[in-house]
Image (cartoon, rainbow, N blue to C red; front, side):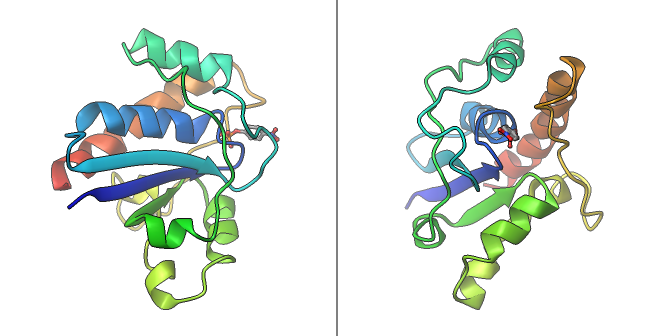
Amino acid sequence: MHTKILMVCLGNICRSPLAHGILKSMVDHDTIFVDSAGTSAFHKGEAPDIRSIGVAEKHYLNISNQKSRQFLASDFDAFDVIYAMDTANKKNILALAKTDAHKQKVKLILNESNPGLDLEVPDPYYGGKNGFEDVYQMLHKACLIIAKKL
Ligand code: 4NP
């Protein structure tokens, strides 16, 4: 059986494409499916931000083929775990949940590496280039823990 994991941020062009690419590189593709989405449709159909593609490349990952899509209510049935990058993303995802089972699938990704602290992956969109390396490092740490548990 496939375990299906969805990474979600606001635009699906900066943070969640990195989380998607990092976790995908760590898991067995025959048993684990990883995808990503944004709570908004602002960047629908676009490739990841060039700065996310760049920081991924620096770490030998190619995420340039990903395409932004909006999170859908049907993703609650399609995925086993839905990782939100920040609390606003989590709130927006939960607003679309109709059952407790759906709500329980939604987690803050950094609670994997920092249990119970409700830390957020900062949005690097308007920040400098270092923001993307910082985001890469925190997502890499969280994804190692996620991958180990799968
Ligand atoms: P992301 O970053 O949620 O990590 O993909 C953002 C990308 C675009 C925008 C906001 C955040 N935007 O407002 O266009």
